[in-house]
Picture (cartoon, rainbow, N blue to C red):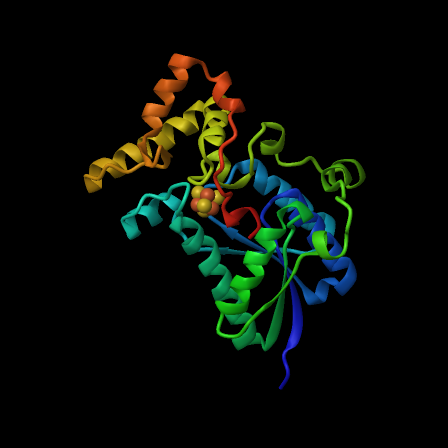
Length: 266
Ligand code: SF4
């Protein structure tokens, strides 16, 4: 029997994915849609507030999947500290949970998932990577759609629409200046500027990350770190000391070339 399509919005807790989810439900009807979120247990509390308000506005419940481990617990399990180049937390807590969910839709409900992402035209290469991933990774290929690129040709002011037309305040991490709103500013793929921002806004959270890194190094007796400088380990402790010595401001302005994690879209 042919599977019935189900439209799945990959809800990251960001503005673009919220807008795409809204449009998807408008087009295909609530009964044929899923608002899907994978929880890393590291999210900022205001992201949950935003997601609940969006779900209520759209009129559809959030379907949440939780591995149950935090990114830190994943690092211990795989004996590898996530860093700006490789982060197993994303693979284990987001990608794996997503694939399991999609296979369940097919096997248990005889539904054919179509995935929707809130990626904009300026990030087209990420759309290509995701399309390629979902063509090859599940047992059978899964269709992916990118309405911000394929339908809304011009950059839509999604943040303005959500705040001014829908009356929903954006997650506070946007106005606090983080490059992305996932994992409460603690993303191991965030890079130098992101961590300088974390140190400025939430020094306690920075201290927790620093401690996590120190504990991991001690436990496995390995010289590893989340950030890398000139291809070598550079710990958050060293970075904090440098920021304290040279002044935080200059580190807030320095862009680095880290590749944002896929968690921003899934
Ligand atoms: S946002 Fe960053 S730290 Fe969080 S799960 Fe994704 S890659 Fe890991």
